[in-house]
Image 1 (cartoon, helix red, strand yellow):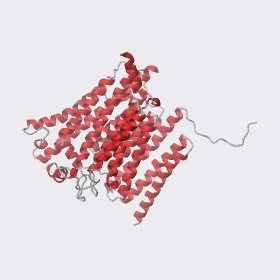
Image 2 (image 1 turned 135 degrees about the vertical axis):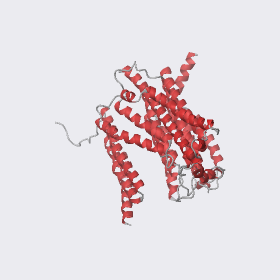
Image 3 (image 1 turned 180 degrees about the vertical axis):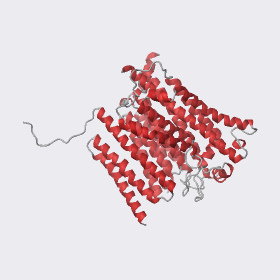
Image 4 (image 1 turned 30 degrees about the horizontal axis):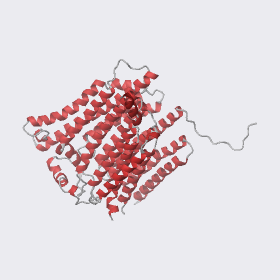
Length: 118
Length: 106
Length: 332
């Protein structure tokens, strides 16, 4: 049945949707960033699950093993993890500056203050 | 064969201690006793599991890496439990004491 | 149902529970801690999926640096979120529609673990079979990262450098003149146990970072992981002995120069290959024989990556910490 073979992908979609829900329905900016990082990590899980070969081993050449898991998704996700933390750091710096400028990091209050000024 | 039995015993007891530490976090009444339960997981639970793994492995490189890991866990986990308990004490949390039943002050 | 499949299901189940916990909790401190647990669980999942390099990076970056930066932000912005500002129905509807469309999309995907899936058939056999003959190191991920896909890694290093510049621009350079009288990231004089244990641990952590940096050719490791572990040791030093002491040990300007130096090193290796008549970042001309050239090239570029990652992570932490100092030192 497809359940056994597609289980990984469905859980990835559940995690992705949880992260997405946190981003769109919580007003706090730091919470949104946390939700975004949950979303990112679920995408990494998707790619790494696609690269796995049943009965394979880690892609480090050794004389005892013949079947290896695919090294290409590993390389892509390594880059993606580091870029993700870089953008999260810039995002957090922006949150700190927003707090200093507006006095709050709730999205609706920031919107209110912007509307009042115009 | 004997080494297999000993390593299985260590792994099972280590796993049981980790589970009992987790149960303790739920069942104990206040923060400090919960910290104590959690530290059982870190020190004896992980120690026995790594001992079981050391008995299972055959290369010296793997054994020495496992021993380093255990030394590191032994140094850092009790320190972090201590830091957490000290921070809680500084911010005013006090240990829970059982109310003594049936005593009247006269 | 094999034991691997069981482990798979259990770990993914825990991930979902942790994510639900983050969505439900109102306390930002608890959410950040749960996010750290989420990263650690996904690192364990990556090990089960045979992605050891990725697991290493995710554990050090996600469960280490990310948690520290978010906690520093929380000191500046407040610990609780306002619960009355949610927009729940719209969220549920959008998520439900998107989720069902995506699940409909997965019915066409190949079976998990299939050795004949399209992703396993084109480039992967070439890398697995030929990387030892062409590059000469056992770790295929490092050879692909630094040699076959070296240009992407160059771009990634520049992205990290840019993020460092971005954070410095946003949160300002710390000036030596306006140091507050009481430093909040203060030396922990009264925490004897923490100080003693940190003094014992920081040198082994630094040596381990060097080991990971140079052992990346033979096992999991490489520039990114080593850079992050190095930065973690320096951050530990700054937290236990005080930001001012750490600043004296590692100057702000030295950090800034180092972060640019790593990118420069990487670019120079490419330029040297250029000047020797081959393509940019073609390492085979760096030595008398292509295999040795690949070794030298990969060593140098991983070193460049490690230097930049260390310097940028340390400088981001110092910037956040000095901001915390300014905020709380002014009110003290």
